[in-house]
Image 1 (spheres, rainbow, N blue to C red):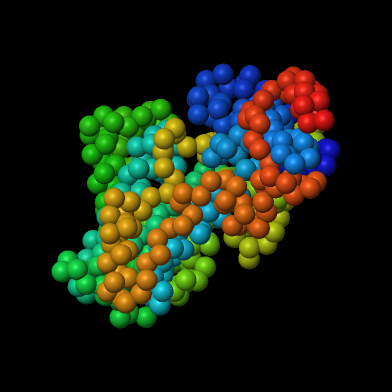
Image 2: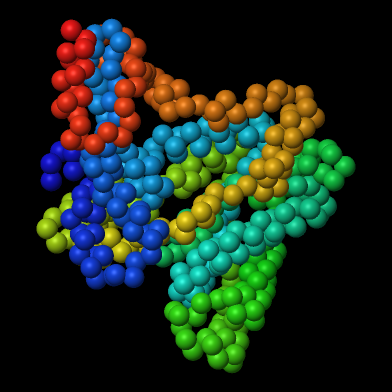
Length: 402
């Protein structure tokens, strides 16, 4: 691979193996096709070029266009950092935050894959309702906490493993408008109650969808038999469904920083790919079943493409959701109230309205509007120009500036 391809090995894998994969899977969904084509063309010039001209020295500055597809691993770093900074403005100083992971038995994975939008939405709603109902109980908090939920559908080996990471505040708004903190040390909700509530809600919702004929059973046609379906539900009910409490975060610690890695992160980062050759792709993974040892896996190139594309979400599906006092429709009102009650200052979210240049300056201290030659001001000349027009543009520019 060239040095550029070494920096973006996943893009290189798509350029090499996606055509063969598509030929073998002509029924590939529109979302997956769009994602694959975007990754293949990202930062290559096939999507065009952005051109700026320095108003002082006339130097042209050219950048290849990024695809900005949410499934692309090549252009999500700035968005991930921006998301982290935005969420940090919503944290309350001095209270505890908890990280809880909700997952479902692996027996459900084929059914979820065949009904992604429906069953992943059910997963989100059951997580939200379980946490909010338990927090509302005066035995635990008697208040509405702030919850950030992030969907993650993959395991280290790129297998389909849907689960939700949540960050939940250890304080909340009471029905009479006060802010209270939990008095419990460690995780303040009984884990068994969380597990049973989550399991009950999910299986109840699943059964209703089945009874109303709203599930695709293409993954297992035997489930069309009511007796087989009942047996399937019984197997799921016997599973423990225990949520995983990873650790407790205090105040403005690294809870949000951890979740940010999942908010815009794709199934695998370029840094984990060791090599892409004519037939295979080799990547690193962490084997949690073997003391979290780092190992490598080599797969056929077309298999690698399929492993990534299975994690492309349906169009319009939101991977990140907010609930409790962080519900999008009431977030600002509740945050102002909490800060007022705690005699602190709510400064709002200064990152929300930042354009790309302002964001990069804030994150990296780099002024992309400054000429690298003379530090003059760069004037945007054209956006998304095809490569064929660049020579004439640059010749004209050179002549005009002389």
